[in-house]
Image 1: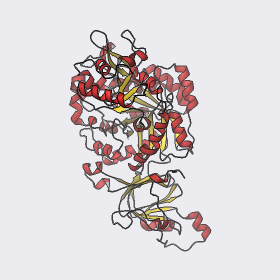
Image 2: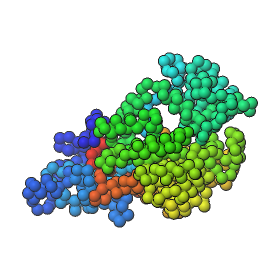
Image 3: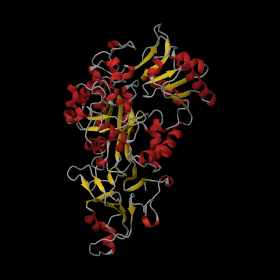
Image 4: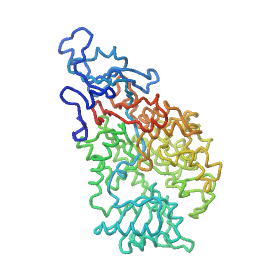
Length: 579
């Protein structure tokens, strides 16, 4: 039994009738359906019959050899039959739970191969501020947060946008100093790629006007060379680590957030597998995951991407990462991925580009972004960690960063691992075909509004017209035979897969078909997680990770797809969510 918190799941009880079983629009469970096959002995019934059967459905299998079916039979946690309602009768015995789908659509459970479940679902931050507000409002909000948290050593917030800070008439550091002069304040920007600090926080972090930029980061300064309160990319990450260490209840908050909110919410959305795209193993993230797994409280399959710290000594980090690897085939939890950043993001001008940005905010050499990990260093890690079994999840946004990551894989990989590049905002068309050639998975996020083609012109001031076209080019990658996965990067974008699917099929000129989008969220993502032999499609012999939807996606408009609801989610043959 995987699920131990019964309050989360209205499991089927006496009579095997689900809630709403008298409604014409809801699936029904009926234990009185009899088999038309000849009688069998009790031992044969016990041995051969299914534990659960679904009938009368529109079942989309994501199996190109047999894409549609009416019925599925499950024995314990495995699929033993896929076919018609008439044919499945032979798998029904006295103790078989029979669920009438009443024409509803069933499909494999969704995989989200890039999200931040601990960071997004925890209460580690003490306050949230709006994306864009006036200076006076920010001062009031931060001062109130200080009042509400009198015992906090560090005040840790979240929510602003980098554009708001850069457009302030007052220095951002002075704004926070006015709000809270005597305690350190650090506020994470929406994408987590910059932090807003006051002077006290800078002082405790040992940062002053003559400090050198750390690897993969930039210390923001004004025209006079004074600190402006903004730390970009890894400069901010390192101070956030310091702030997080001041909290005494972080791991408990992470634990409760995952159990009480995140996993139930993901199951409700039909998500049965995830990759934690940044497991901060120096921050206790790994211990939290292991605790939940050891307590048998996981309601999804989780593959962890251990964070590769850019500032850490390579020999020490490689040794540590190897020691943390685990891939027990019988466990829902795997520690078999490593998360790398090769660059930053476009709006910071830190994404690595071939050509310079049209604005020069950070005075970086060449004004074409930065590297967390260089190509040569990434090659070193590939050679060292592939033999252990690790796959790499590589953040790459700019065309230079993507090109260098592909180069590193081409030069150093044995070809046996399933590395993926994620985000892929500005891709050089010359690199489209290299994904398929090198066996590199292309992971993209299109659930966020900012990825819609209508927002592409917003990048023109930074990139110019030509480079601002075809951002996140999922159609071009698919046309060049890349294995595409779609994910959320939650909480940068919503984790609801139906929003991602709806956007993926409507973002002309970089739109894909519905079948391609579903494959990207299921079978392709299962492949990226090294579990496509187990899940990702509905086939005999695979595990029963399944979802039932309230409407057929293939008969729905783009808007209707985005509003689709899950009525049931199964993990390993057990119901983990029921509407």
